[in-house]
Image (cartoon, rainbow, N blue to C red; front, side):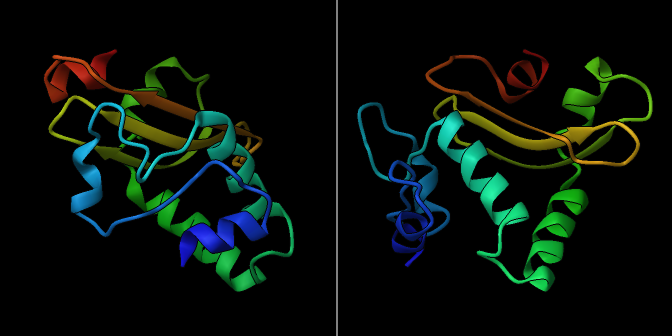
Length: 130
């Protein structure tokens, strides 16, 4: 599955063990369905800039991130005016929050930002403001 594909492209950290919505548990100490910010950023860069995906698949991945629009309000307030943002977000009931975003000036995705927050008692609204 996906974990095997990730290993083939050099991501030896990220793993997907379960399906949605079970993978959203984020249990402390559970290595299932995990990654690191560095691994996620490197993998996304490979998927969007190498030939690991077809040009059509790269466009589809980018379009999914553009259409997500969840992190826009969370991140846009700290970006310079006119910057591009495309994102994919996630959350769990146990206080986890994840944002993977492409950012850049002049409608160019020049930067990848990955933010993971976990083990917080903050509400979803509070997590979105941190």
